[in-house]
Amino acid sequence: MKGDSIEDGEVSKDAFPRKGVARGLSIMDFILRIIAAAATLGSALAMGTTNETLPFATQFVQFRAQFDDLPSLVFFVMGNAVVCGYLVLSLVISVFHIIRSKAVKSRILLVALDTIMLGLLTASASAATAIVYIAHNGNAGANWFAICQQYNSFCERISGSLIGSFVAVAMFIILIILSVVAISRN
Amino acid sequence: MKGDSIEDGEVSKDAFPRKGVARGLSIMDFILRIIAAAATLGSALAMGTTNETLPFATQFVQFRAQFDDLPSLVFFVMGNAVVCGYLVLSLVISVFHIIRSKAVKSRILLVALDTIMLGLLTASASAATAIVYIAHNGNAGANWFAICQQYNSFCERISGSLIGSFVAVAMFIILIILSVVAISRN
Image 1 (cartoon, chains in turn green, brown):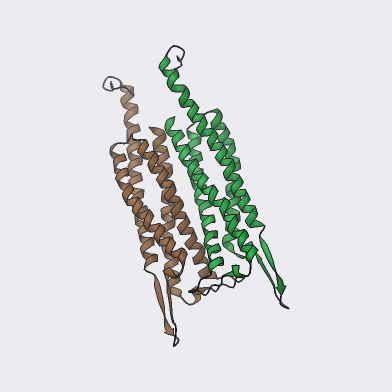
Image 2 (cartoon, helix red, strand yellow):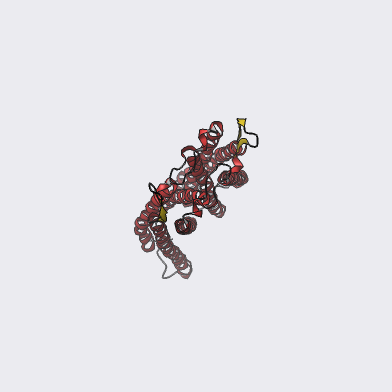
């Protein structure tokens, strides 16, 4: 694009909305990242602080459920924590894109990292969901018992903490599509 | 870019490698899609045909394990089948990109669909992995029994069928990055 925009009416008509759209996309990118970071942080904290001790005990055993009894739930907390950390760091690049809306290489880098983080977050959310499903419903074929029949509040808490993670997955899909649109316009 | 490339040596030097790279990216896209389709098809078939009947029985029960005893494994087969179908259909657009390497809008559409399919495939692979892990190791806290101690060949088969799915996940991540690079060059 040439610099003679004062004389040439066509350039000014075309260039400013284009730059405005690119900046708008970058601002939306920034907001979505904050929402996704909050959602993953909430999920990690909600899951990571879950435990329940039943109000009765035998002579030898006290019945107690904690999230780290189940490896998939530990993976869930770690996955959400890593993605949350990444999202906070990526805010720096997102701000850079608001200021310099023509940057392309840093956007490509961000799409690549976002895609990998989408994979990690989906994997951790989905593995935890599979285990929460078994905890609720059990499995007759494998003779796995539905532990939610005893640990009610534990199960409610681990089910609820999945929501934030799936919200963040949806945000990531939107983020990737927004970035690709922004790259195609430069 | 102007059409006077016969006279202007600089245009012909620059334009042809650029077009060559775009076509190269499109051909690589096509090959990766075929590999990913084969991997997901293999995973779906391997998981979907798994069952094992133990060589002993009581008067009332015959011990038999089948993949559809576990809902996560059913989700795995369905997820892989859907993604495989999508990949085969997407080959048409991929061929179109080899012929017309300057197309941008169809590439954006393909990235958006690829991202959603990446989410679906990762979710199904990861949910199945969480269940296969429990089948192998059981869980002392929840009193879930490691069914693999009885159903050996069943467990080997369901573990093996996960591999294709994870290979396809890696292919999808590369596909998305390749598409973004191709879009940025047009």
